[in-house]
Length: 116
Image (cartoon, rainbow, N blue to C red; front, side, top):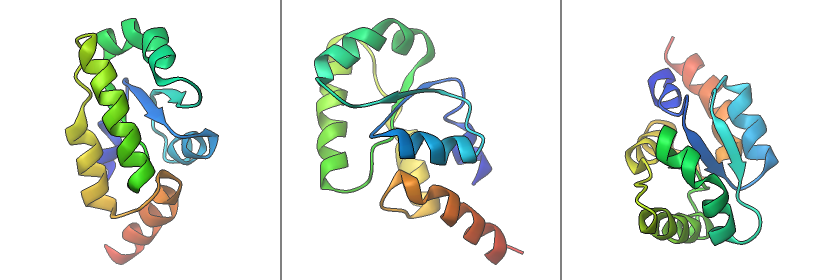
């Protein structure tokens, strides 16, 4: 679990909103968070240099809207030569089995309890 979360550290992490940022900060993830509000192209352009330097993860929710956003942002990022670290997103989904990013802290605590 900790390894999956640590894979976010140091990267640019695109999320859907401030509640997602709060959830990840609660889990001590040290990343540059970008809330994906507004026009995706402008957001990608604004953070392009940092994404190219640090790498980025598209950690949108694991529902239909989140998958749509992953598709849109992936295409835009790839058009500027940045390949989002999709394996990190997939690993978090597989380890935690959550539907939303906001659920991560509660699921983390539950998994800690059941692993003892």
